[in-house]
Image 1 (spheres, rainbow, N blue to C red):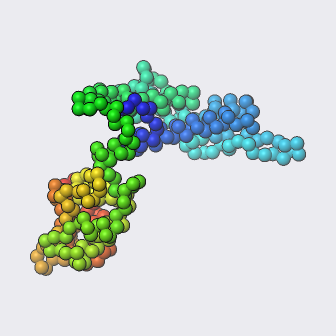
Image 2 (cartoon, rainbow, N blue to C red):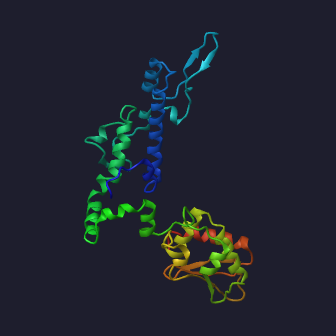
Length: 293
């Protein structure tokens, strides 16, 4: 948006699988660059390595006749194979109709052009494929204020302003019992002394970043909190008692939610362990559907 050059780590945010593939090629490039800059490896060994595309060990003999290792040994794994063995061509993975260069479908990725492959992939992902959308976005923003004025913000600050905060990360307070009791409301059968509610607070307090994203998506419909965190969530996160007939055992049932109201309908589980088990299962199975709403 600000005409900045995309880097490989940016790909991880939009397609983790594609990122891993590009990262593998980039690491291969880095190894080649390191090898070419190694003054202890003679030119003929460098040429042999580059042509073979694998990891090899070069031995050098000292004046005393002792053989010393100065390079890598050929290994029987994916990294020791030639880049050609990956069968990559200059198309966007999963979209062979999108060519990164002219006649890219017929152009194979080799050790000689792998730098070009990485750079054209980044250009396609962050420039060519979204050029029309980005230009339309810039045009719309410029009708309100000059988009260049946003350059005073860091990327992380803009992300928080537009998309909200991702759980407890950099600059975001980690949830603790005090914070949760201030901003999570027990109601309709529960109060702050109710065992199930107390256990629910402890469950929330122990969530790691990935678990928290899924938890928020399950509860609110979004993996992010608004700017300001939990205290800014509207309506407030509310936990109510889910009830059945008296002859039913609450430990046998799952919680459900109302994402539009940030409502959790929590059975009165008898232990923290059962609550964790049921919540984790509900979050995992219901995070991408409304089956438990």
